[in-house]
Image (cartoon, rainbow, N blue to C red):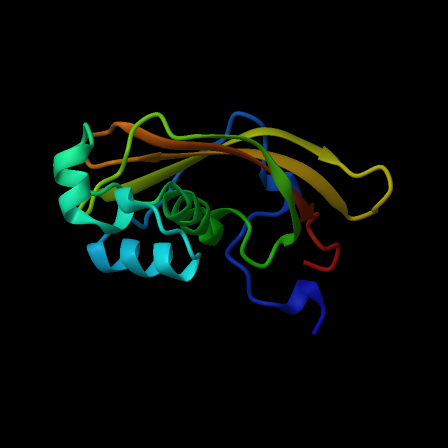
Length: 160
């Protein structure tokens, strides 16, 4: 099946103008189970994520933190439907990632994405590189994750 005929909800290269901000519809509360499963699956033994007694009595937070890699994965994942689903060729990498505030069990993640830059590829006709800045906020509108990501995107098919 050609890319032009595949279902997509993502935006084409031409639709991703710098300065565009997308407020993603999906919000997600992060549960204790989410955090324990992700942390265990990635073989991260950090007590801060898994040991309630340690987190309550030995940290400044007084409770376990959500694994920051889970937060990052959810921020990017939530953005896919409205940015790159079916219109991306490849994730090229992250140039910046930051976690200015922690997420806790029960926090609800809200995500917005800003298009930082967009350009046609010089070597790959019909494709281009887009820089996204993904921002994740908790239910109190505190910025908890900021990630700058580059993606190789498809241009709008000529037969559409």
